[in-house]
Length: 453
Image (cartoon, rainbow, N blue to C red; front, side, top):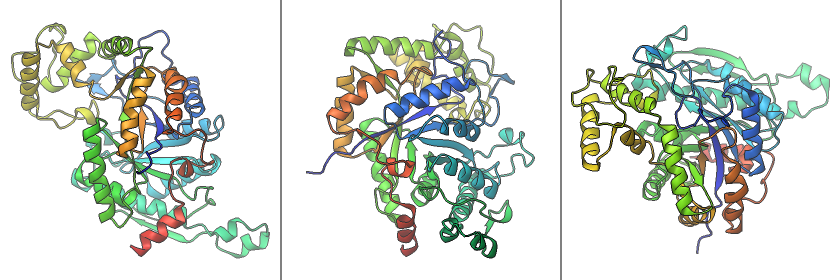
């Protein structure tokens, strides 16, 4: 019988979202370093593999005005993670950074810097935002066609990997000053992406893990293929067991096709945990959380994004509008999760569901956003996770806490010990680097196999 998977956890400190209950008195600031420090150190106490920061390149807008109902922004991810490197020792530090609006070799150098000063704990979550609305914040604007986003991203990642691998290890390990002055410490790297041409050399030796870990979260066919070729870890929106099983089979097949072993890309679905002493108390707590995540104002704003017009006169505890949306396709100003939906088809589907289930506007929005979440006592949730571990359909979960910075406390104090007793969660860190603590092979082994393939 195959041994169960040892599950690992990451924590996702979101940027723009309404899943964080930010209206409660105990909710921390989204810009104060103390919130980040406490959450990261709690996660490290719970042996989490990674602390993950999302990214927002522009303040969200709603119906032409700044959107004020969500958590809306915070300091630059790499700056924040560099500060966290000084107050943590093992947990990985994952920055979401965009391939469209960064120069490849400069971005690679900044990641190499974070990786070096953290002792080999840096990771890059690769994202491919390409729309002109976001691009207005940048000199190049929205120049990248949507169809080209992964082709461009792959060239950027290849350039970064080339820079990270260009340093001569024998130079870095030499105490002889003459070895530094007489030799070239790095091979020259050229980055050609179709939108950039750059040439440079690495200015830094490699960290103990060789180079930063690559994370990716695209769910399209192109995104999955990109992950199969380039990523070490893929985030997934498919956390329900059957969906997770289907997703894992697909990713493993794509990974094999890319010339890598089936399990080379670690799979981490996003998840929310709501725990209490009993299952009944946890269900009641979950209802409270959902209603605080989706306030009456949030519910109206949510459907306004599809209808494309002011619906502030509607009762959030009443029915959906009977008239059709005034737009054909939703825009990107509220983020990727709201973008490019067929407005009328979406409205029709929502009205059909609301009528069939007797849901008000607010109840529907809660239902639409409650698909992910393990709810129950620590023992019940641990038994649920045992099923995932036994089947090997995931390598871990990327947890979104519904409250910051205290949202991991009960997970670390109550759920983690249950999982450790079952033998499906680490009892200590495997090493000092992120690559070790994710169970990834050393870079040299992986690259040798890749070249052979």
